[in-house]
Image (tube, rainbow, N blue to C red; front, side, top):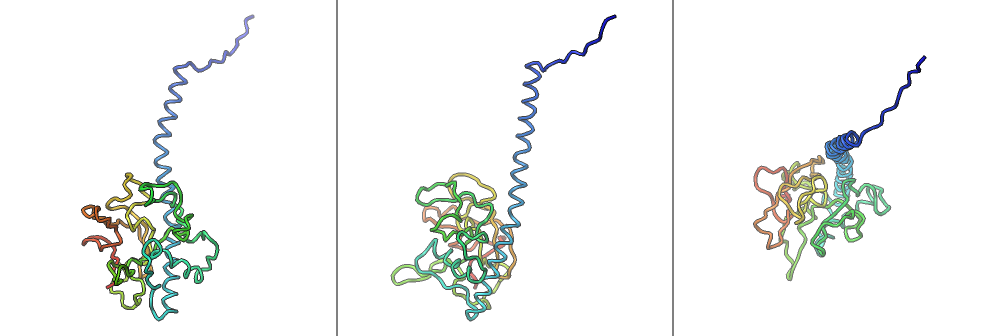
Length: 239
C-alpha cells in the first residue's frame, strides 16, 4: 500500500520577483494617495487655528477702539508675527511654541539667508515668534522719512474695511511669498498660484490661490506687496 504525501512547493526565483514587483507597483500607486489624504486631513486643523486666531484679533480690536494691532516699523518678519504676543493674552496660548500657532502642514520653510528650502518647521523658529501664521501687517513705515510703501491693515479700524469678506486678516506664512506647505513645487521659493490657507476680516477661512507677479522678481517683490489682479479671492489693502 502506497502512502500519498503532499509535497510543499516553494516559490521559484521568478515568482518571488513577480511578487516583489507587484508590491512595489502597489506601493507606488498608494503612497501619493496616502500623502494627499494626509495633507487634506491637515487642512481642517489649520483652518480651525486661523478661525480662532482671527477671532482673537477681532476681540483685540473691540478692546482697542475698533483698531487692529498697530504696524511695526522694523519690517519683516516682525511686522507679520509680532501680533502673536498680543494674541496669546486673548487666546490663552501662553506656551511657546503654542499649538494654536503651529500649522500641522508646516514642515519646511524658505530661508532667506540660504536662498533655499530648509527642512525645519517655521513655527519652531524664534525669528518668526514660533508661528506658522502671519498677520496682514505689510503697511509698516519704512525709510527716512518713514513712509508706508505696501498694503496692509495694521492699525486700521475694523469698521473702515470696505470688503471684509475679501481682505486678508491672517494667513499661513507661505502666502506672503508665495509657496505652499500643501503643494511643494520647485526650488526657487516662489511660484504663481500657490495654494494657502487664508483667514479674512469677516471671519471665514479659505484655501485659495495666491498671485505672484514673476515679472518683478529682480525687485524682490513678494505677494504681500501688491494686490492681485481681478479674479483672485483676496486683497491685502482694506480701503
